[in-house]
Image 1 (spheres, rainbow, N blue to C red):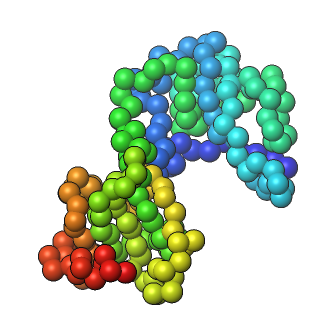
Image 2 (image 1 turned 60 degrees about the vertical axis):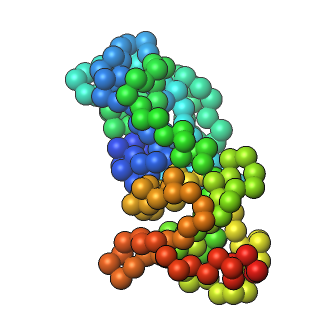
Length: 209
């Protein structure tokens, strides 16, 4: 089993609300002897083994934008040993020991919980959302649906999960402007692909269900 180092720039681009990378300022502080965290990914992971591991590497050489270091912690299953030399670049560094003053404060998107249908997570698409009154701490009251769910699907609670809204924002962050809208409200994606409020939503029928 071989491995490669993941590209954090690409991960941040794909998952901007759930994956943050160090700022350019923090990266400029790096010196020999510092520890940086890299994501080691197995080319072909065996069943039951970790497909990727985040591990600390101690910098031993710096040549412009390229680094050489030694693995500083024990892997679970990847074929690499503590002390083994690793070559990497800025694009592979997912964390450092330094406190980053430029990391966006997106904790609110992890702390804000929404109810989402499994169909949304499978399709990676949602077209309907409504906000009911919150009943539990951390629950925003938002429910997110793909719009393709059948009645039988909607009536089964096993088809829903409570997750951080950050996951939903990775799919479409155009809803940011609606998240603070007080309950009761409902939105649907229109023919232009944009979310618009449903002014005459049947709340009486919703509460009778």
